[in-house]
Length: 201
Image (cartoon, rainbow, N blue to C red; front, side, top):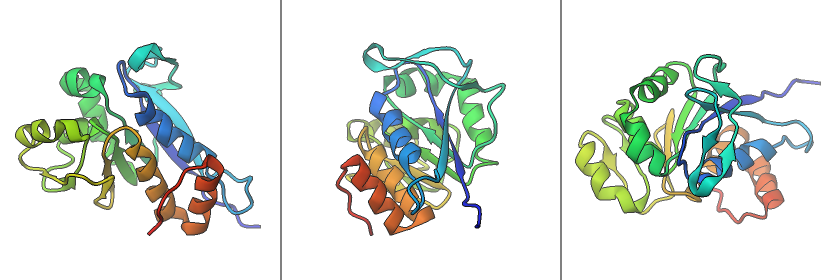
């Protein structure tokens, strides 16, 4: 019996993060299994700068598994958004450097919502097309003129970088990645298990 590959997914956490930005992708990747419905396709972990408890929007407390200092390498990174991304973390040099450094190791770097601001700040989106939450379109274009912003889409796939629109769009992006890596059958089974309607191209 062949051993199925398990991709490792690291989700960045920080204070004032949008809950569904990280919880949506966490759910999709965590529940995805191969056709046997038992072998997990993704091993999902959470990371924050210090590894200490973070306070998401509206007071949700989340305990990350790793800090920057002890986190393992990952195949896929998810950088969520929220007020904490666009107002605080965008000015956090250590976070921006960590994101930039991860790009040298990962297969796919992703952002959800205003997490795109952090990828852009790290220089990862220069010369590429990206998307973000509709409420921040104008600010994004003003701050990052080297990035082509695509409006009114759920996600933009640039190969090794995938950005999504706001909040629930991170779920669509995650299913897109599952489909890219594992195909329509696994993706359909996962969406059905979550009772989530999704169009698979």
